[in-house]
Image 1 (cartoon, rainbow, N blue to C red):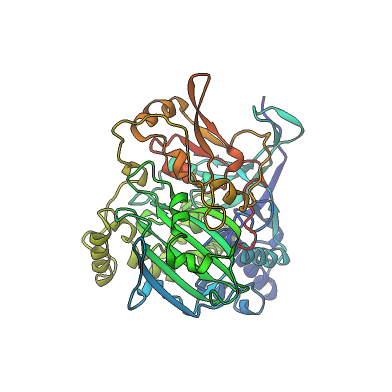
Image 2 (cartoon, rainbow, N blue to C red):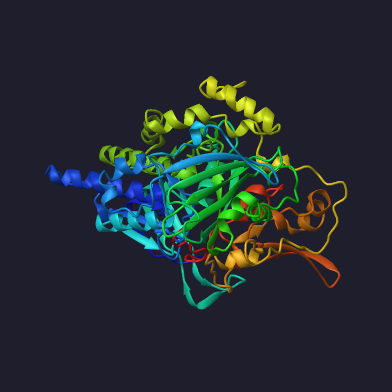
Length: 553
């Protein structure tokens, strides 16, 4: 039986209220305001722009390191320093190579890791502030609404269906059942973040993939409050080496905030070889290094979070336009993996999308041919200037650390070309090495000491994650039989290890093995959708409002 849905129509629908989506909305409002000041009717009135955010409030799902290059925000809001919730400006930075017991400081900080002129920020707070600017401009912003499916029409898209609310675990309507809305728009902008479920569907259906497959990393982060004087506000350090082996891409960070707060985290490329490697455990071990311990010991864990990152670079970006639609920010793979920065690029991409949209609606043409000017705008902007020299950077890290550093040096000397351009690699999930004899055993993940290091559930508590337990599982396993046969034998069920929130467990009940999914634990990092070796895990949005609450992170 077809569900009768209320239909709403807009000129522009933006799915996702992160930096990219909010920048797009605010730039549209600025263009409309400029029209009014010039005595013209706005092409896109602010009230005809809708923004959807799946989190229970703005900023709830926004997690980053985070050091922000202010370049994008300065273009969007030139006087941002007067009111934006900026943290301290970077006062000093350094890079270290870690062994198991030593920290060797690089004589010179590598240029990509130099951060003078940047700010240590809370992305969650910045997003809330941007959302206030958007709402004050008259844009309609709806929290706790997720885009469940795209409306495909002709050769493009025409809007989204939001998720049904009030469904039980088996999909049955509860007394509070409310069907999702049919939101139609002349142009739909996908700003869902990394591995957006709608963007993934669109790219697969219309074959919009880039030259290379997208490569991903997972970043795991804690926010600490440490004793006074332990770390200076604006002090920034990046690390490479231990606890990662020479064949695992990634590194750590330590950033000094105000009020004796410290951001500490580890980024791990999702193309490592050992299927039983546990990024969460590696992060906990990272904190036990004497260099990190000296900063954190005696402090208190405040918040925790995890997020995937699109690190493939320019050649891994999908085509970002189609009839009736654009993809921006992390959804379109716009991140500089060498600098570990994407906030400024996301903001700029949103601005360029808004200008493309305004021109398209002014002409009455929302075809792919017209919206392809977005690609030309990207290529003519500083986004390409920044991303082009690092277009092969992450791809180079496949043969071992020292070989990879040599390749990186050659890339820097050749403007990003390196030994091959484009440097071809396969998707990360194909990099697992098969086990000789995978057998089931009860899961025993890292426990921690409860003071400096923690088990998964303790960290999860500090993420503020919350879901309604009585709702359909938003983690779809297309063939569960593979989990108890091939995946167990070949890889030892890596989902139990790569998920930083212990969502997946193989359990034996009544003599039979089955996959148990603890969906309420999910922090929406989407690592499972990315790293599953058989690509049978599909992440879709849960009921709007569910997920982490990254307040202050």
